[in-house]
Image (cartoon, rainbow over all chains, first blue to last red; front, top):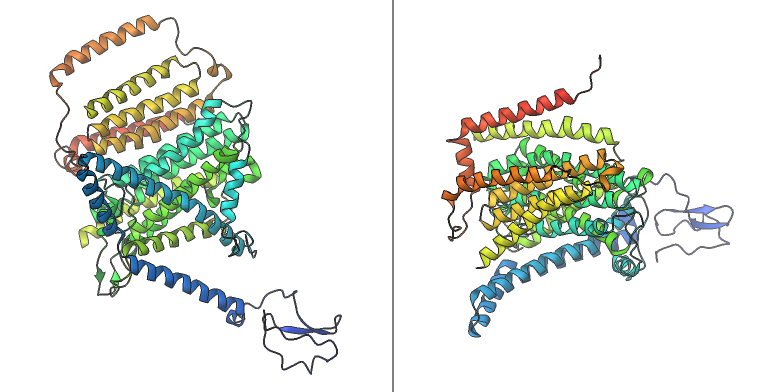
Amino acid sequence: MSEEPKPDAKAPAAKAAPAKKTFPPAKFNEKAGRLLKTTRYWPTELWANPWNKPSYRRGALLLGGIILGLLATGAAVGELAVWGDRLYAWLLAFISARGGSPVLAQGIWAVFKGLLVLHVILLNGLWAVWWERKISAHIQSRVGPVYAGGFHGWAQTICDGIKLLLKEDITPAASDAWVHALAPAIVVVPVVAAFAPVSFGRQLAAANLDVGVLYVFAMAGISVIGIVMAGWASGNKYSLLGGLRACAQLVSYELPRGFSIVPVLMFAGSLNISAIAAAQAGYKWGFLPRWFIFYPVVGQLAFLIFLIASIAETNRTPFDIPEAESELVSGFHTEYSGMKWSIFFLSEYGYVLLASFLLAAFFLGGGASPFAFDHLIPSWIWMLGKAMLMMFLFLWARWTFPRLRADQLMDFNWKFLLPWSFANIALAGVWLLLS
Amino acid sequence: MAESLIFYSLAALVLLSALAVVTMRNTVHSALFLGLSLAGLAGIFAELSADFLFAAQILVYVGGIAVLFIFVVMLLGRASDLHLRQINAQWPAALLVCAVAAAGLWRAARSFIAPAATRAPAPTTERLGRLLMGGYAVPFELVSLLLTAALLGAVFFSRLEKNP
């Protein structure tokens, strides 16, 4: 920005030739009679070197600095599980010194872990909404929020949250008041509960459940009831249609989603999410991680089916007929306002985060480092990085693909995803027999 | 102490919501209470440390059966479903039949009553899998065959005839 050539009104263009290179290049403007950075520059030069833009260089440096800073912080903090063990030992000693029973310490520790997981979900809401707005903006050649907070509009979600808190909470006259009020709770409680066995790194899960995978899918299934309740209780035909569509879609896509990870369960031999992540430890030929996504054909197919079905489960854009704005106003949450509406939003982002962590644990080796030589960066940093990469896939897909029609959606599920997920189980069986 | 407290409150939840299923005038409310009742049953499984049954109960009954009930009630509902009584004048007879069946079940199940296991909960999934794929493989496959046949039959009979 500071490297623009000084516009000289009197000098002809030929004399202003040794001006510095700018992007887009300055051109002599007949009307103004001086060199101008043209704003009408369309189509943009596809192969122009973006590193000529100072803002591009600065942004890349900043991003690199942030990532390096995060890695350095991670390396300094070390494994979070170690800190947790220390804290628990201290709590146990503190309570037994005062004559309390260890059961009390276990209870306090369980509540503490629950609160931590809850805050992961809440903070994710703040972060993911901002990130989604920035990514959608840049995909559509906009800039998104820039003012609130100063740095790239980072405080925009906080301001939005305050606005949503202050909004009037409306219950329509035609609604079934109790069901209408309960629906957001039925949607959001299973999200929080489903995070219990999710692994956030090595030995970093709130509950070490042996049936972890089944438990997560079971909890995710309960949310459907809340969505249908919201659709029916609003007393609005658009809401009802949205609720019915959501119900049909979620129940259908649960099947390929469940069957697509059966190969992963077969390879790992466990339903415990931490055990599945741990089963992918080690490196083939000394450098290729033994992640399930690198298993030829089976791994990639399972990954794709699970990713697509997860996007459908969160009602996001290629599969957002339950809340299709152009037909149904906004589907099952048309009649919700204020915090009740934002709870639906929060649970959507909660499910996106859940699916990201599950993808990272099932297919990308959980907290394992992609480099055999790396012993410095702790597992939770890798896990978080992989989950954020997966979340980027979700946002990318949402702002890239057009919406499917209701019948195409069902055809795609029952005639494509489900048969291929069955075929994939057979392929996994062949793989296990051969190896 | 804590175990029996949890057990009896869950049992009360299951029974009361099952009662609400038949006494509610609004069919959608009935369907929602059915979901609650099935979820309470899952809670009892969890309390008795049957972890796989707990997850399967929620996955199949709450996330599947109850949702389908609600779906059908909402899709095929008439206006009268929202305020008419769901039971007719035959309810004392039905109660009598239920009482006889319950007495028979009680006599059959009485000899198996024992205090709930007090040992630490152990994962059951692997043992269940070995039983289903080992000793009980043939009955398991027969049940799957039966379910497939029922599924195909349902599709066949609900299909619209093109040439009447």
